[in-house]
Image (cartoon, rainbow, N blue to C red; front, side, top):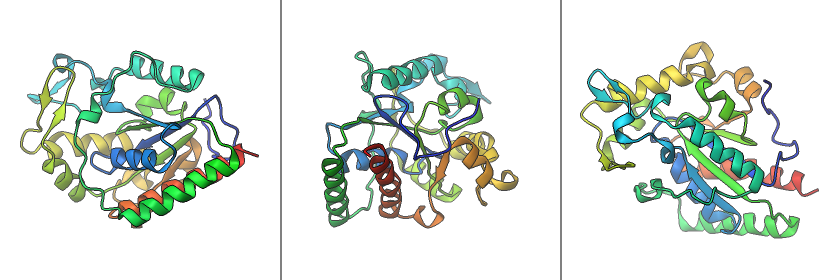
Length: 258
C-alpha cells in the first residue's frame, strides 16, 4: 500500500494526526508537550506509544532481561483501534487514560522568550486561518518501523527525531524509571547497550543509507513513507527541533485553511 508522502495534501479526516518517532531519549515526548503548549490547548492532545504496552508479565524476555523496546512488547491492535477512533472522531477514545504523563520529562532547554514567540505566532495563525481541526500528537519509539507499517500509514504527518548513541545512553541512564501498567520499571545496568540501542538499529536501519543509523538518512525511503527528518543541527537543541516542527506545521495549516 502506498503511503502518504506529501504534507500539502488534504487531511484524511476530522483531525490532523501527527506522529513523532525516533530513538529512546531523542526528545519525542518533550517536543510533543512543547507543541501542545504552543498551540491553543483546546486543539491539541497527545497519545504516547508507551500507553500501549502489554502487562508487565507479558513483556518478552531476552537473555534473562525484559525487553520493553521491541514491537512484541506492545498491544498493537489496541493502538491501531485508538488511532482509527481518533481519525474518525477527532478525539481520544472515551476509555483512554494515559499513564505516560505520570513519567517525568527532563529539562527541555528552550528559553521562555522562544516559547512565547512561537506561541504568539502559532495562535495568531490559527486565529487568522480559522483553523479548528484538532491536532492529535502520537509519540513513540517504533511508530515508523516496518513492523508497524499498517499503523504508520495512518499518520498525516510523520516527524523523525535523531540522536546519537552517546546522547541516548546518557539521557536514558539519567532517568529514574517508568510507570507501567502494573508497577514501575527501572532499567538494569547496561540496558541501553544490551537492549535499547540494538533494537533501535534493527528497527530503523532501513531509513538510513547503507543501514548506518549514524549516517545519512535515505531520502528516497523517507520520501516514500512520508517521513520528515529532523536536521542534524537540531540534535542537541530542542529549541531548533521545536522551531523545525512548527515550521512544518505552519504550511499544513495554511494549505488546509484555503
